[in-house]
Length: 233
Image (cartoon, rainbow, N blue to C red):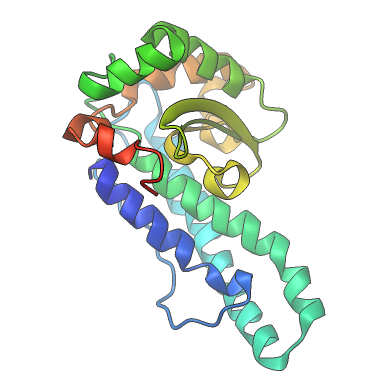
């Protein structure tokens, strides 16, 4: 899936959470997205056991809980129960963010990944960070430093067209939290690595670069100048 297709999927996923903003919309229930590779395809960098548990158990739980929470929110809206609506906001944020984040994460990985990006993305990284290695080092450090559970992100600042690195706690979604468009996310919840890397998070973060899918990027479509242009979004 290209980054353009993924961004479209991301915005559809995010927009379907609009009941949390007080809007009643007709929608289908959220579903667990299929992977485009086998659970064992990312070995030895990420084990098949981790991938199966991460996708089929953890992500599936976010999806199920999101559907349940949205149904409760819909009922609260129909009753005009503002107290219930407010009380459901944390669950919407957590489970909605978990679904959005993981849906992005799976497309960021590939058994044919690793190495360095090419084309417009390479140019943008050099422009904004000085070199690919500098970007990688900065993102790795930011990701490893997440306290507790969370995510490290490479995002696009839509107002300036610049690339930015940041981190989000728990399952807070990048765009909803910072306004950045998510391009690359690294999950540092322990369920993403503990069975294989124990408590040595830096080893996991270092290893995941070997399966990063640089082909999954709007920058490689030749549309970088359009998508990064201020006011494009």
